[in-house]
Image (cartoon, rainbow, N blue to C red; front, side):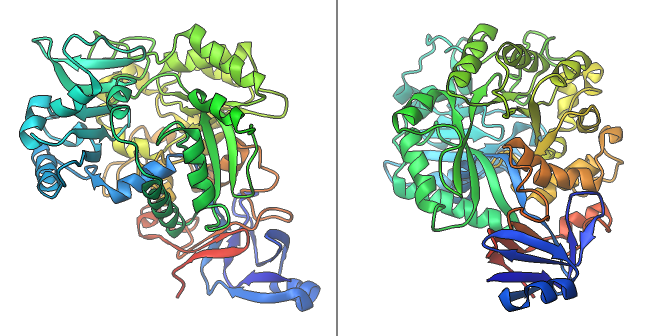
Amino acid sequence: MGTLWFGGKIYTLDQENETVEAVYTEGGRIKKTGTEAELRSLFGSQINERRDLKGHVMIPGFVDSHLHMIGHGEKLLRLDLSQSQSAEEMKRLLLEKVSNASSDEWIIGEGWNENNFADRKIFHRDELDEISPNHPMMLTRVCRHAILANSIALDLAGITDETKDPEGGVIMRDSNGKATGYLLDRAQELVKNAMPEVSIGFLERALSSSVDDLVSKGVTGGHSEDLNYYGGFTRTYETFMNVINGKRKFRANLLVHHEVIDEMRRQGLGYGDGTEYVELGAMKIFADGALGGRTALLSHPYNDSPDTSGVAIHSIEGLTTLVREARTHDMPVAIHVIGDLALEYAIEAIEQFPAPYGLRDRLIHTQVVRPDLIDRLNQLSVILDIQPRFVASDFPWVMERLGEERMAMSFAWKTLLHSGIPIAGGSDAPIEPVDPLLGIHAAVTRKRPNDTHEGYYPEQKLSMFEAVSLFTTGSAYAIGREDERGKIMENYDADFTVLNRDIFACDSDLLLQTKAVMTVVNESVVYSDFN
């Protein structure tokens, strides 16, 4: 017995502008597409449910190719600093949080971004001590590659003015040599390791909140990186199994950080294992940091800080060793690369140890590229995993970081796509908003909502079809499911997003007023705001 979907415009995403009149699904799969009359005639006695779309628009389900699902839930549950437009506003929010905190509570804030402040202020530990003299404080920057900590938190972490920078991290210091509380990349872990372990109950609340929010925005699945945090692989993996598997229908592909590979193996698990809704994906490796904190690894110094070219999380030898380790477990790799030198390191490592036959590696972010690297990428079995919303968030300050000469090959999504390299699209939530329609808007306009200019480097704008494909066919291709997900075609999974507007036939700014009215996973309606 199955379901007939009809009464709206249904885009297949197989070819641009291709539509069908109706879809028949059965057992969680698409059995056939065609006209409503044809499907009623063929499957009349088997149709036990009829879903009239009432003029709305159905597309393949949005899948976020890169996010942190528990982290997104934490942002929903904790102090959100991402909307602060000044240091004064951020301070006010922190003081309010401190005033309501229990005696033993850590003050945890998410998403601050000094580039939103007119003065670009980054708080010093002394200022944080004034705000929170009795509670340890840890504030995560929007990029998640830097934190701020007050003196109590630094003391608990054992960080003094004499503490050496850890490999792949930086403890920022002022002109007097005093640790400022601003910790970059792997230096963050010193404080995070000193924090009390979050409870299973909190993890489940965070993940539940995350999934509920995702499906409300039309997202049917996500490729998430969480397993090296929150107490390690086992308790985090079990959180996904408890919350999603059998309770909430959502397709989670979990990247496995290289530091928890051994724990995964001890559980008797490997690449591709799991269930219909929770499966283990590629080995995650960080090659560098982020442009915001100047820790993305560039081949030439930063334009606005010539004394640094960024931070290599691993040497080229270390990165190659990790890629080789992945191959011993028959795993593809998913490497975080933002700077062009980090990308070069990743390419060299993959060239030495290519992806196992039939699998493909993924390079996450790929924000700064060079022409010579595109040629090498085209020789590899890789997909680029981009986050279009970074254009809306990082411009115009990123031009100061990189300088004009590098901009032609930075955030160059059109160039990369037209070079023949496959691309998937995600949000990197909680760093960026999780709504895929905002990512699609950024990809097709290259500007922030309400900006009046023609877009940053408008020659790199994607078409609506290209942008939507990032979050549908692209995400399916990233995990080798392109023959069963990402399109509305026979024998594909019955995962759909229903929108209140035809985004292929409207002005791009109307994306900002578009919303999901129904989300369908495995033929089941998991969210509905249907009128």
